[in-house]
Amino acid sequence: MRTLVPRPPVPGERTAVVLLSGGLDSGTCLALVSRWGWRVHALSFDYGQRHRVELAFARRLARRYGVDSHRVLRVPALSQLGGSALTDRRIAVPKRALGKKAIPVTYVPARNTLFLSLALAAAEVTGATEIVLGANALDYSGYPDCRPEFLRAFQRVARLGTKAGIEGSPLAIRAPLLRLSKAQIVGLAFALGLDPAWTTSCYDPGPGGKACERCDACLLRAKGVAEATAGNR
Image (cartoon, rainbow, N blue to C red; front, side, top):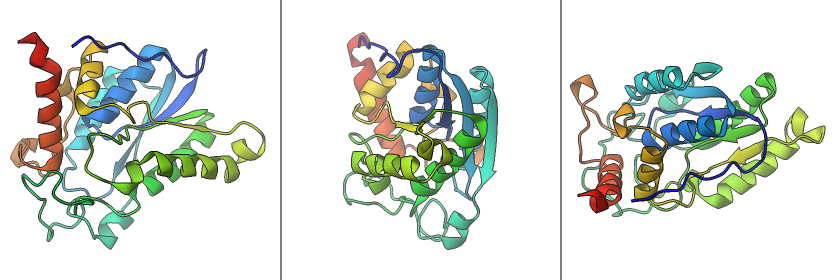
């Protein structure tokens, strides 16, 4: 699969806050903005997620790409509130259930709203002009806070609720993978020199972080890798 690396949406050097979970999508975003020559302040979150192993991958990615800073912020409220299989171990992570329910129990209520709000704060503190996240609206698990409508609404929040926005320099919310299939994302990762093995996607990893290979995230990842590499066999 031949994949073209997207050109930067704005010319010149920029500074971005990149939401870096340690997963394939966020890792690809980090590799992309690094290729563009943007300075990066990476932001990860420890919110009591059962797949907390992803933070180790995020730290390694941040070091590999030489980001200006990498902060891991604790957001304990999400695990205290529960309501998701990712933050409440009494709720089982569905296996081999991809596409069977519009909004699966792995949805974490208001997660992206909180993460983007903290990213806005980080951007204002660091002087960043861009916030980059790996939201995807094609091959995804049906989360409402990954939709284009949500991101457009949050862009308006960024414009109205920040010092930068009021003073005429609104922060841009960028989701460069939004309309790509998982296969296209994998292809882009390869084109950027990002080995998917440097990332993790599993929602329910076993001892040592071994992927379960049956949750929605594992199935989407496997499907994307298989489709992206099919032409090379």
